[in-house]
Image (cartoon, rainbow over all chains, first blue to last red; front, side, top):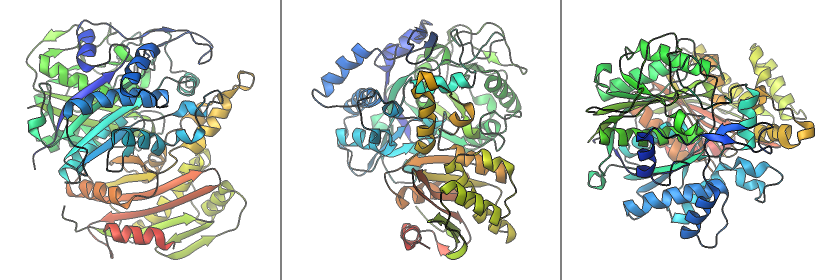
Length: 380
Length: 207
């Protein structure tokens, strides 16, 4: 069986409420990051990219006039509604639903939140989303730290190739909450300025929020202009440390090698890398080691964290969708925030948007628990 | 999908007992889950000081995997390229609640990185990977209840596509006073057929 493709897609973010609108902003190097002053979340201003509450309310009320959903559910419903509507396929037993999130409705644990604590169970969130659209198969939640979004695409491909489903809708989302911000702050990982992945002057991470969705399908008649085939993918653990990246980039290196092998591609055939690049000291350094071990130091590379911050369980899907549009436009998007290389091994950071023929890109992600995922996408 | 895979062994930790392939290995009526896990750790001479830094979900999954994988190692059946596919209902809510308490009140605000890192269910797989040097595939799924169907499908796909030579899979859940671990190893060799029916039977047989 040939590989599944990624088709219809949507992004709900501070840069817009559909993929085209968001990609247009990125092409113009506009960031969604800004200073947020909210003392209920953190005792000092922080940098983030958050979904506008008024705009979300308006979009949500268009699809659900009277229902009662949490903020994350609203974002996911608005995003998935757009993708499902465009795909226009019957939600039969051959259609799956994968939800990618690290923390789901974690905000309901706060005593001031009006929703029941029950809503913090990720299966409850999944049922809200699945039942709203009338999915007839049990939703699958993937919660695998910061690789979840790209891992969800890999799982969708594997389940379709294994003939469990013909089509799978993947929706990914995470919120900016006091829970998450205080945690990264406790790790002293938050940057007080817009993040600068791979830069000498980088001072850490920004956390952002999006909801994003896409259709993964075996049916090529459902392809859209930006569609790509998922040609190879792998997830390998560092087996080293639960919160610190491997000093040898072990899991990321192995993931890329395994994905290349499956795709029957050489590293030199990759036109572009959409990397993880959180702008923490250790993560970016680890990536430079892993990419060099793979021989990819010359391959144009960016991190999109300078536009959205790190959007956790959504980031892998978000950045894959932008990579698809990058291929469609034959344009490399700039790695916003970068000034001067600040990792020990060379990388070819994209500093300005550049028109160039693009055919194949590699997406990578790494996260807590020693998790790493690599996936390779090819124009169809 | 063709399915010529087998279940090499299984282990269950529930109701203060540890059972491997249906055989009772350890039972102790202790007060709390943490206390029980500590006694089990001592009983199996685990000798791994990092164990005491883990949260309850990781401890439970770690011990269950340790019993199972050490047994395979003793019998020369352990495969280096072993993937981990786990699922549960409560994700990391047990530690999420603990962390939430530490940030709820500004007068009593003490967020700790050592707690925060365990607010992800896949950390449990990271701990198992570190212990047994598993550089393989990991995936953590959340379902409302034990779901043999998706575990079976996904495990077969990993083996068929040669992403792994064996898969450690199953259910590890901790939610307030209730807990349960049921893990099994799937590979090309073994005594039990790897079918949805067999997985479901082993899960519900309660031994």
